[in-house]
Amino acid sequence: MHSRPTIDFEALFAASPNPYVLMAPDLTIVTMNDAYLKTTMRERDDLVGRSMFDAFPSDPESESHQLLQNSFARVLQTREPDEIALIRYDIPLQSGEYEERYWSATHTPLLDDGKVAYILQHTVDVTELQRLRTLAAEAGHHRREEAGVFQRAHAVQEANQSLALETQRLRTMFEQAPGFVAVISGPDLRFQLANAAYRRLVGGRDVVGKPIAEALPEVVEQGFAELLDQVRTTREAYIGRGVSVMLEAEGGSPLEERFLDFIYQPIGEGEGIASGVFVQGHDVTEQRRAEDHQQLLIHELNHRVKNTLSIVQALAMQSFNDHAEPAAARQAFDARLNALSAAHNLLTTQNWEQAGLFDTIKTSVAATAGANISRVTIRGPDILVAPQVAVSLAMAIHELCTNAIKYGALSNDSGTVDVRWETARDAESALELTIHWNEAGGPPVVEPTRRGFGTRLIERGLSAELRSNVKLDFRPSGLECTIVAKLPAVAE
Amino acid sequence: MSLDGATILILEDEPIIGLALEDMLGREGASVLHASRIEEADGIISSERLDYAVLDVNVHGTLSYSVATSLAHRGIPFIFATGYGDRSHPAEFVTVPTVAKPYSSQDIRSALERSAASG
Image (tube, rainbow over all chains, first blue to last red; front, top):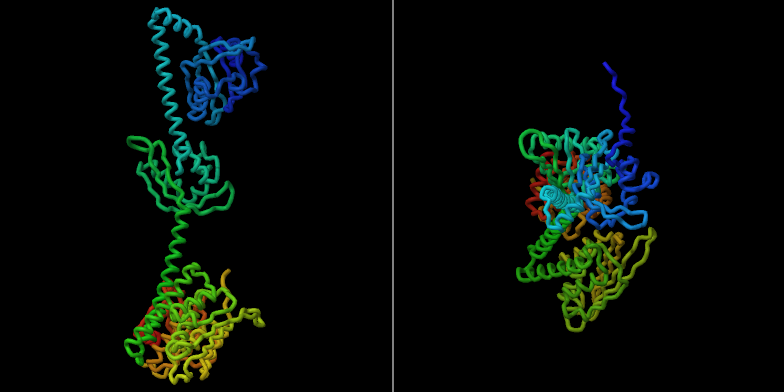
């Protein structure tokens, strides 16, 4: 038995009459054989290390350029050989002019560990054939067969091109889709595709080509790989709504909670295990946060409504007490509701965060005294008070006003009320507010024998609320009420 | 059960509501000690002899469970009065009778009865 000589593949490559050129995945020319140099009329040193498009420049907008670029892209994407049946690619001459050339090209990926390590380009110069065919057509002599081959080749090419365009369009659509899209396939759940939104979701990590366990280890721990595999093996789609997922905002950064709406859709027809899973969805984290915030607001609103109902209930109980005459009671209740409503209106304009003291007092007087407000002087520094203080104060002023209208300075045509206040810092630097309510010009004042709700509210309620002292002095010349209150801090 | 002659602590930060509750209880013959702040309530508990207490849960933004704890230690029956949303008490107080605002005097009376029975 004769032992065969070892084949020297490099020599074979170099000696082949077929032109070959080898490129790196970034299209840098690595090497080529002599046939290639001959057919392209170039020198080896002129080509090695340069990018294909740099070494053989063409208008990026031209059909030829795009055909070539798309073919390379397909090879890198699919890791399958790709053919261009007919491509015009002109070759520069020594003179600097270009010679019209037609080529047929095959691009074959050389894989290393599943990844494209090189692209081998095999080109055949078909310029002569193309020229003959054109001449024949011009001369009217149809060389049927040859022309037929070319026409078929051209037709296939056009079909491929429109398919490629369509694919490109879909790819662009996926890439730019507002929702996240990914295609995951195989038992190791390897990413085939992930669009911009998906990459943003996973903190810009490069997931394509990697199995999920390597690309996104944190989601495997959270059971999503198991879920994907279940969809793949059972072919039953999974729909998730507002699902909480902990993701790294950037590779290696701490986990952050995101809420996602998504679907895992098995890919492919037929029975048995699906070839892959189509993942599509939306990040609804912001929406979820808005909902939580809204829930909080509704909660707060409910709290206020219940509280207001309790206040209304209390006002009703006080107005319709055992001593009250029904018509007067109803009137008193209406007036109190009116004062409460005016205070609420005022607070609503300030988002229920605070109210100006001047407006609080003026609004309450206006709601109670109506046109008689012209006989009430209101002056003092316009400080801000907390909502609860504003409501209490408004109700106290309402009671003082009501009392003045019924028995005091506003019960005749000439009496006046002077409301003024000043503020000071106490020893603990808390703000101390002193309000003086002084009536004059009314009928002689008699101290009431029974303390009504208004008086009690002023004396007790307000005092408790404001941590303060209230002094009611029923002077014959007119009621003098002094309220000294330590104000709780208002949120700035 | 009669509240006649009983001394009742009210912890309530809304003065108008406090006043109405005071009147409700006053009509039953009880005398009322009113606190509008947690510290005020603490002071009253340590210095006065109390028969019952009615605690607003949220007092100026602070929960009143510390007051509830002192009352429980002293064996003074008490109830909670709450607005919306603060009805999920800590485990030790889940059985405390709780009335929701707005409440009637009947609500308060029967809740106080239950607190006395379980205490």
